[in-house]
Length: 297
Image (cartoon, rainbow, N blue to C red; front, side, top):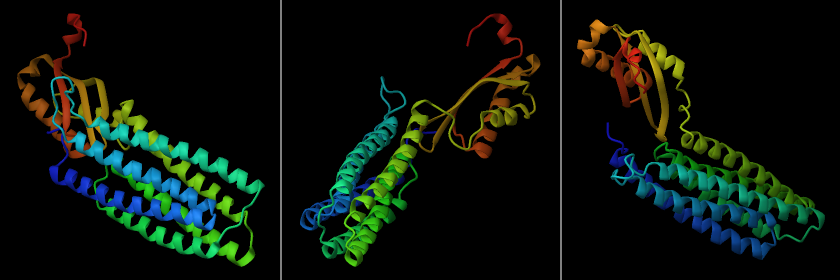
């Protein structure tokens, strides 16, 4: 198995991220101008989120390009983990932006400021259209954590745009100026939800946790059921990057069966690939007396 994702998939990721970056930049410029013009904190909050979207796309694109580089003498796994570091950076950016928006919203709740609801509504609708277009573009890309992180940014911004639209309508109909910062706090909740989920997944990969949906005990039991296998130990399952699980372990066989090592190893690799979709494996086959020789492994 090669450690690189299919070239066509990586090229599709890059193209999608570039298109999404252009859309995010358009939303950011539109909402900054609109927020200043209308006096809407909700629009400025959404613009801040759009800025993190833009940064996320740029970081994600750079990480995708770097992750495609082949392994070298020092980095024998290649640069795949850059995608995870990118996702981690995006999650932290989201949390920092959420703190800033929440602070501003609290100040506006204490002292409401006038808002031009008509212009706010038009700009929010246009921003929503651009955000939804970005989500659609990234939905056609791969399911890597890096791309999913970028998609989370745009999905959250789309929901935020809906909130801004609702705030504009309410303010226009009732004159309740506090509804603008109140919607900003809802946007903060959306941002935090996406950021926490993204950070949790990135940290799981960095801690080399077993990928979601893969149970180590179930994998070990499946290997033990194979003919000629007496036991399994030192079994480790982790992700090199999203969608690239790896496994290493020791398989114990009867002393007389050691001449069939290749056959046993093949059966183990086949079941790991076909039943658990684990292609990259490192298996040590040893007799049941191997540990008695005092060899540490």
